[in-house]
Image 1: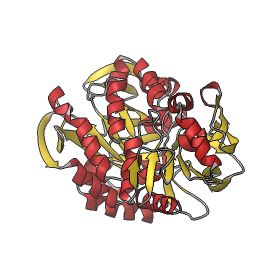
Image 2: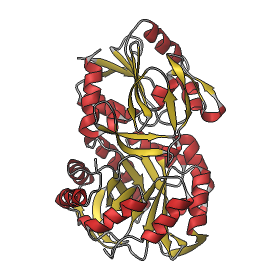
Image 3: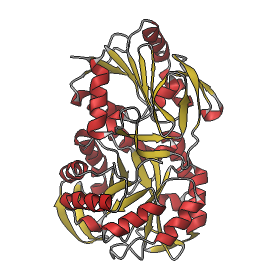
Image 4: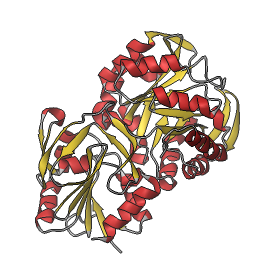
Length: 244
Length: 177
């Protein structure tokens, strides 16, 4: 297996990195290129940019962000948020993104996964699954998607997804640790790489997640501070995690 | 300055390859036949790539026959072989003897950083198929990572997305031309 991956996640809106709870109280915390470069220099294996723009106008900045990031960052990055068609996804990949991530749009129209896999190759298609108590939630986890998480994970694989980004909603932002049982169950159900998300509070949590998943998404644990990534990597090495 | 031409067949990652080549000091040109190095990038599926190559396929064959350098990246490596299992079976360019089969790995696609031996540097991989050829000169976890045959070099990883190690590799590769 390739080495376990650490993937900082940056929320972007209107072309800036923001921090906040969903659409409320967003605070500008920096430029996506500057922060992305700093994380890359700090040892990130990949980056995820999640566009949480509230409006279509803001979202139009997404392709520009991807293009600017690609000019400075020489590690792979995924772009997610608001992708509803092959055309949306292609524009991001042509700008320099390596993968795109879809969530609610795939739940609404699962054929989208096949279309994306056919056009871009499975390796470029990440399906993000927000899960709580074994059920999938959609629309920034505000709605029940009427789907069992394991069944949906398998369906995503059959339809051609290349990776699953699994966020445990009840852990997200808590820093209480990843939902290891859920991640392990999904990892057993599919043969795709799984990216664990939601709940990282310390290096031990991340090390545990990397035992059952192939990558860990790092959001609130980093506090938008690339220096924290450097110390986290040192702590993980001390715990015996074989990082790059 | 080394000139590099990139074969365009609708693959999505051309811009990343261009940016990386410029970063290591190469000049991007359009002339696939005349450039110091031709790059066959790779992302997408084998059939649409071969269809998309069109006339560029003959240009690449002629370059190879004349001993002029070609770098194949990921799918670009796989397309250089005789045939691939992908998409129900597709004939490749036949620059390198061998074939491409569905990847046998614990998790497919195989995505992430993995060490390449000999050397030990880690590069970024993202693939579901693998090259099987006697021209393999370096491997990663048992899978072909670098293939060399005549003036053709093929890499299963993405040097353009493998940080400093990838750029070092690319610089070496282009400076040999």
